[in-house]
Length: 217
Image (cartoon, rainbow, N blue to C red):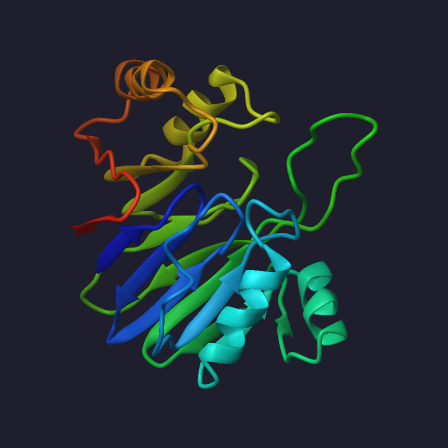
């Protein structure tokens, strides 16, 4: 499995001979020119995860790509004349030999003035390859055994204690930071140190992918 960080929460996942893009949002600049995608998946309908104009252009430029999103984003795309499969927890699907399990229901609570919208995380599994979990904007899903966790490092809805507890509960072999666009370099180092020092996960590898960087697992 090869994972490329394309900014903030956007990842290009290459596994089981398939290329899947996750969360093309407005803090991510590296996805616009992508072609030959097999699927595009979206966790929820916030602009830092789904930027309607560029994401719609991406879908049109990848006509063979399946599109799987939360129900609210699927509705938005249908209004633009684009097909999208609304998906939710308990509705697994496959992209070739890559199995995808949606997990989770709602975006993390942020503020009383901000309604909680649907949020669906995605677990990617393929024979002979590691398991990847991208949770979107929530810490409450139950993804099962996870090798690589795409971890929301910082967000208005996230407290450091909850971030650490999430990594401890999931107990992955490796962590890739996502949701990092709002961080200074000093803040990035601090949050990474918290996870490495306090999560208590034995043998945890912290792979600090930056924008347009890739790693193979």
